[in-house]
Image (tube, rainbow over all chains, first blue to last red; front, side, top):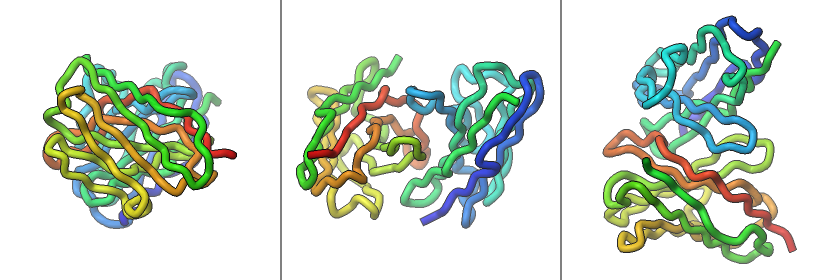
Length: 107
Length: 119
């Protein structure tokens, strides 16, 4: 099983600033990596797939990068609605696995 | 717009079997992979498994001995059965649509249903 490790566990950032979230895979997942945003009481929402392709309707301030074992989700100019928990997910190798999440909170 | 809706009991007794159904609207179930994912209270996401529109299944090893997925294309819905429940199975259960072919990320999700395992 591929273990996905996200860091940091909690990230405190001020509105308007940039947030950088990391996700590391225990072995290569190529570019088969997705990012999700989850707000309290809601289902996760797909942000990025293929490591860097934004899902339909996702604003350009969300960007993903990386391949192999190291991935980054960057949110430029944070807005109030962006404070949430973010998960990465690999779908390169069975079984599908998720990271433990990064909580993005207002500083 | 594709929509998914979970249905099933909110409370199940230990050792019993959980049965959930996910009804898909706004699109056909006859393509894509269809998954169940759960989230224990205050914790992260756990993939349970998926079923392809052909009926073929793939389960996470952690659940493989206890889980069965099925689908009903005539009613555009798919189902989860998880047996031998314990308190550790208490979670919000989500159904979700996976992609085509190798693209098994989840682009549409149900709202989730909380299942509590308790006597």
